[in-house]
Length: 253
Figure 1 (cartoon, rainbow, N blue to C red):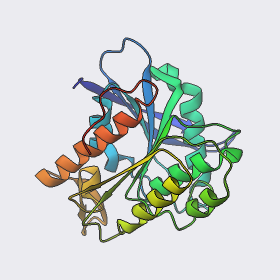
Figure 2: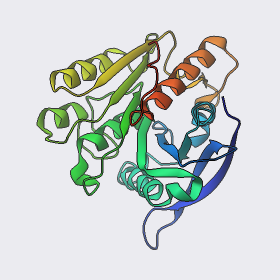
Figure 3: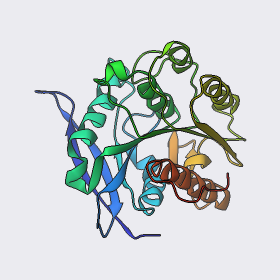
Figure 4: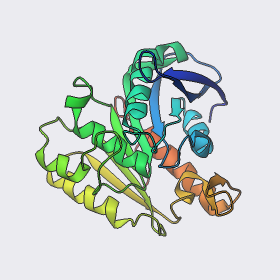
């Protein structure tokens, strides 16, 4: 594993609009441009810190990982934030040592549905295609924050070319049942999209190496071994997805 470094930058929503913050995690020593990962948090407003452990672990594989804040309580449900963060990564990946031609789109919970939806709706991103998509503990049968449309419905109608999809879900998830990921996995297979599903022995928070704190009303860092293992497994899945261009030995799922 490589040592990593992190810093925070603003990304602009639109001309004349306020900016939001985005954390960049990258290997401490860069040689060639690294594959990029844009990682979206869940429905809690401005919770990029929740993904810090997962992002750092993913970056240790030699990836440049971008984790933006976004607000689900915005008037448009967060759509402009999500799309603006994607635009920032596409325009500025090389500034941070990343490869703008090889961006993996990933998300957790509401961020998962948003990531999958973008892959299914290239008409909303000037035809742009991710190198791969990773959905973590997502519900794909409700409108995605990024598009306003339902991923499973979009899949039935899309003519977009397939991209690799990796789905991960906690088998003990009581917030979003793992059958949501199974349903998308089955639907993607039926449409001949390359897809893999991993079900891990953890819950909705543990799958990103965190635990839910009722007092805070949000997830926080944890020392629970089961959650930390799950987070490490998810980081490996994301890193493997980022190697789709030049795959190495496939991981054991």
